[in-house]
Image 1: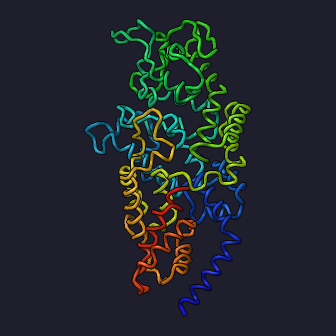
Image 2: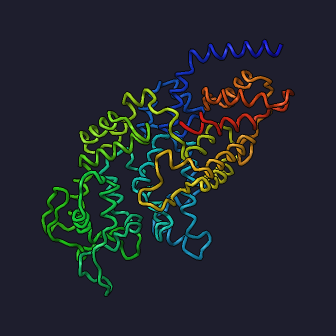
Length: 485
């Protein structure tokens, strides 16, 4: 009898799959690329609006109501809204809580938004552009300023103008400290009796990472000229804000990548160069490649890159339009690179948190952040100016993979804040597959996963009570259809 029932159920599943499976795969691809995987609300939205409608909705996060989530975060993590001056005073060394607290609260809020936020695309873009303009909270004063850096310099601009984000970044205390422009002055200038000089760190990364990239053909002399442009861009005396120290600025003429800057410009030298670099064709190509690499593949299709770069230039650096060009290109809508990108640790733990019912959000977030650190992604601690890597090969190490398996097991076992699941009464692979799809509707079971289940089920003793949700759900979360996207 069980065999007959299993056969009927298996046939029903096949018939259902013929109608819906490919569409479900496309929806899962979109939910994983523009967000952190599916949950009940996002799945309902994408089915109600269609893929194009859902993408357009996500491109306008200001229309999505996350006020309740933000009130919750503000109550739990008070440092998120504080000024840099208040952060330095309230979380000073020797006080409890100390200077580690702001970064810790910011990391918790990032994961909380990834799991529960409606503005999924915005949160993905915050991570992408933070890495692009990375600062490390391990670096001195950045342990305080990382909070207003993300809040004021990155988050408001991810779907705005690239030029505005560049200016906010270049003048922010976090970047001035991290890339040493606080110490960049004209040769021979004396500050507090100490002789100063050029510091090229920010200038070098501005050209190599933030804007035109190495293929633009800039030279060491260009780097030096950029450093001269930003002389005098430093911190105020309390180290809580930007100031332009005119007497420390090199006011001579400058030449950078074909741009001539006349003498006597003062702070406008930097504003002029930021505008020039933000709208440079090589910057458009860099921005487009970064977006396409994240949303499509490590080696993105050239037509998509070209479309995004063209739109970026047409709109003078409108990141909403450049992102729209990526998400509505034929390659993305066709699911280019599906199943080829390894989820970064943040994406992985957030997608499990969205797929499973949680009993304790706080417990889950604490366990997930600790596990992420062991996987290699400790939020806001990336040491390199390029941030954490956005390519799959960076996240495939053996130790990190074992940690993923452990996290999947604990989550499936109803630990670390996840609601425990009852045992599955499913003595055959087709029945198990149907039950898993019912319980984990946002974890699409592909052929690779089904093959794994076929190998797994025969090893379970015949008694139906021995096949638990733990064993089967662990396989799903640690399997190829969930680990990659």
